[in-house]
Image 1: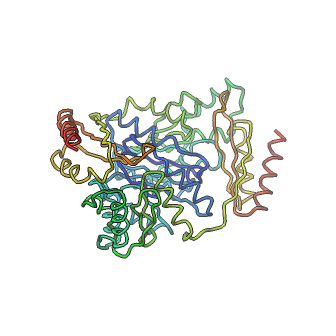
Image 2: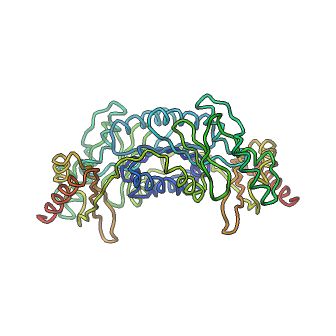
Image 3: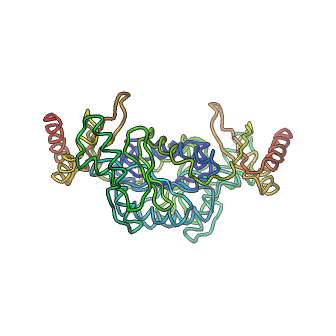
Length: 234
Length: 234
């Protein structure tokens, strides 16, 4: 995932899209492997896009596809793939209809939102019209959470989905330092299950949540049973 | 900034450290230029660390410094810099005292939290004892927000601070499509000010916040005055 926008890096806007996409992909059985956040800076966006697009099966971007001068995602995506930036005819049509219906002028700024790399396919935007787009393995979405979420719903049916990751959470009721030794041994006994250990403060003291994750229900069940037995022995 | 942890990428934990660090650095006059999130995967952490450490003046990491098998940040930082991983004597002492005071066993798992690359300096942890550390231009902190925040307070006095970025926000009261053309022109007139435009839904319709940012108070004032005049002409 690539999040694009000065406002996230300055702290002015707190990102809401990373956690949302993480949950969404998890439900689809797609592993989110890496996230990057860069500002509205073309060279940085291009560099990140090239690297992510080469390294992973799918790349999701959000941010920088509005009508203003600081919205440069479409330019950067076109550069990253060595493609021409064009006004996508179908996108122009969507904007024209929307402007006509609302009595808005389809000015140059609004037309910016129809620009895509040549050959892109559109992602429908049921919230505010201006579409996202798909080029190669990159899915380009808006940064406004409600629009990003609508675009994700629109493109989800065409995503290659995997086997859903299953998980089980156990409250350890004690600090990480008291369970780490045997948890390491249990991880070695259950290679098909990824065992994570997450400390948190419950208001009185630090305690731990143990999270087991696997795509194999029986392996998960066996590991869970071992963790629970071990916790009962103290 | 490098955020380390499977739990963020799976969506199970929603990150709270990025926005916090972004605000914190902004107040210190340090620009946050890029954020990456990777899982508990040594090769990925090492690759990200090398690239970020080479590309930027300062790198802040959070996550993966606890006592369990999935806490591999110290190992990865040592690998990234080609350094030996050692038990830091001062860190061992801190953990020993804390365990003695609480009647805990200073077992092998707890001792893991004293491991740092050779030559690291410690970052105090006023919340739960186990320290972070500094090596080269990398600041290694915990992922639990309260601890990360305490570590940040501890290391802040030694950070090279810049001139604070000033900002002013103007409610445009209309959609981006209606202001984008003249906003582009204003950006060109005010090169010392970074003008951002952020659409949001106010419950009834999409409207826009214009955010002006500059390290020069007078330049900011002039740009602000121009934006406000332009908005009044409709």
